[in-house]
Amino acid sequence: MLRKNRPAFSIREEPSGKIRGHDIKLYLDVEIPYPPMLRRPPYPASLETRKEIEKHINELLDMDFIRKIGHNKIVKIPTPVLITWHVANLGCVGISEL
Image (tube, rainbow, N blue to C red; front, side, top):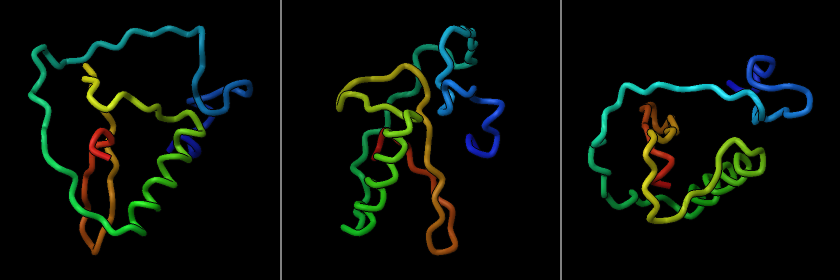
């Protein structure tokens, strides 16, 4: 989506969309306290699948689209999710669970 709509999200000097100097305020409708964090173990994946996921995550890190957060650090904003297609079913995986 970012590549397809690049003119809306970036400028020539910052092609990844990390434009500095244009502060905006976002008002979220979520009230504190937020819902409790889901504590569940990651579902098992094959070694090949984990390597492929890691490759794509590293690619997003290199492009500065995402950033790493400490293992037990609580984030007070919603985190993005990955929508996956697997055996004719859609799945939703929180980035924080990877």
